[in-house]
Length: 294
Image (cartoon, rainbow, N blue to C red; front, top):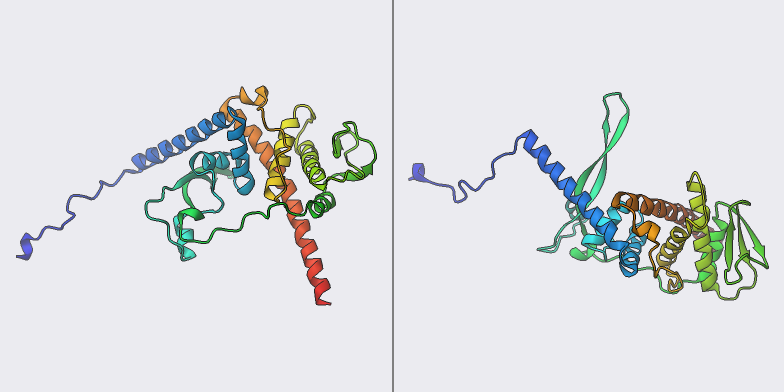
């Protein structure tokens, strides 16, 4: 009889959390994610190979903060394109059954009591395209034309560029002089890959100088190497000559919070350069299109 009917899932529903319990759950979740980022920060400075893997992750996912790049490195370092469940669904793409989500931090604006806007962070669950039935985006073209990239990097340089026959270091193809706010490029080097690598690194010095209240070439040397490495990795230029075979003690001995801060400065400088280079590449592509249409 109907009055004796018992739902098959009776009693399986979880009790509804109170507002306080829900807030505590979210705080614990966020604390766990920050702890994961701290673990990743200490992990990458313990090994040059792990540090390179992090740089590869940050280079591919340059729109993501250094903290989120650390989280992605720790959970799914090979990621190339991330979206949450809803955004993949909007594209009619399905998440692979059993795929484990990747936790990152999403900034959220809120109004403070004094009327100003503050930034808080919520944990966001995302999936890489490889965890879906979607098509992976193409990887950067290997051995991309270094001469074209050199021209584009120099055309989009935030500082003066001058050609020269002599540099302070004979084995270098380019050198940023902070006192003169000038990037010097050596004439007739011949090896365009080496020039592209050196220009990318020296643009790193220039951008770090612009972004910093105080600049020291020696103190920021490793950061500039990392910027050059990430830029070349992003644009398909060989990266074997970048000396990331030892992590400076000054960085390795920092607390996780301070490591994240240094990584953020490096990431921000890289994305500043990349943004200008991308804009310049787009302008040149548009100009070529107009020429074809004539």
